[in-house]
Image (cartoon, rainbow, N blue to C red; front, side, top):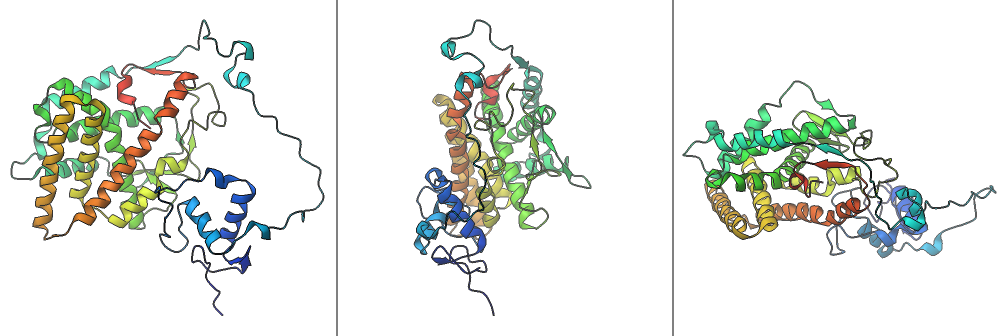
Length: 395
């Protein structure tokens, strides 16, 4: 006889737990959330306390999942305590003091040390020069006059991806110094080539072009990785625990390690508050949105352009804002023509979903700024950059 489905997530149930028919996973989630008092830290991913079940067994929002447990009748009063075997009490854990963490006695903790930790310098001057050369001379090989602007940007994007094609996928086991230096360079130069195909961008002064490039390279790269991951997951070529770095390189989020020894004197555990967890690298909710949307190459190009131009305008204001808004108008008109050619009359729903993804990405970036400032205050990282503006909001 078929089992009654779980009232929380829809998976096969495992009997009545705490007042509701549920599976083991949802029962354990409810008990753990209450016992550990972690429900106080839950926040709704959408902000409206009304997230729905994506599909059977998939409930990304912890707060709304917990609320569903309560709505279906689960009650903490049904918990049974004191059933464990008698065991020796564990010794109390004494929290690490601020003086131990910072490395200075408590009586001088608020004093600026006379000689701080010597910082290493990451000089990206040569990299900026390479990017400037690309902006000066451009890459006109795919810039065909008869194509629309989004088609040009799409072709430029596909051209960059072709250089990565290989026979097999490669896994990155450790995210360390070599990994970051390599992909900082790769992502910046890719974005520089990509921007040269946008009509009007090369008419800007070179200083403004570089300003926009150094502000937006990581945005284009992040959206590219999210869309590539979503596409391969939808086609069942990779599992949910894998995240694409480029076309052929991926991270296994279950086994991948983060090495910060090259930029901090603290261990990962000591500064985990300042580091991104694997869920932060991937943003599974955004990947799921992209899977559901299944955007075309033209729509991906629109999302990349809109994300970069909107962010640059909001960050720099003034004349840059005016120019970026003009570019946004251009891509909006071109997207409208694309939908007309595809005989898509009512595209407002798709456009709304694309803008929602872009807005969520920007919100994620803005919400992490205060952690960056806090890390600077406490000298968590001992790496300086020759061009710090290139790494602002680069999370």
